[in-house]
Image 1 (cartoon, rainbow, N blue to C red):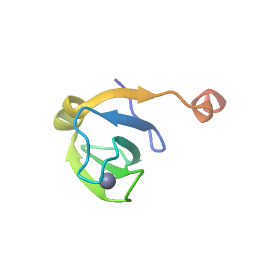
Image 2: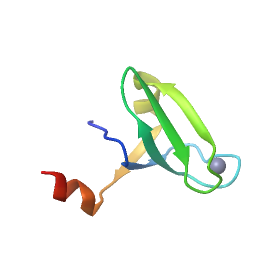
Image 3: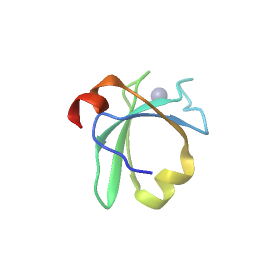
Image 4: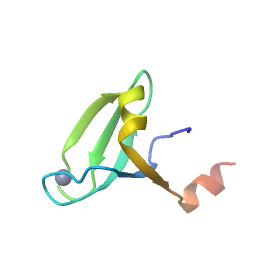
Length: 66
Ligand SMILES: [Zn+2]
């Protein structure tokens, strides 16, 4: 799966705040995601990240970039 900054993903596990939607704010060897509900930021390596992702939300901005 390919991820870009600004992508929104749903995590398998719900964050303690009750949210499960995250925005990707940095991509590289490590990926930084921000909880959409409480704003908590987590840095996680790519392998671990792909394991916690349930699905990626499609958005319109992806279409415009192509
Ligand atoms: Zn949260």
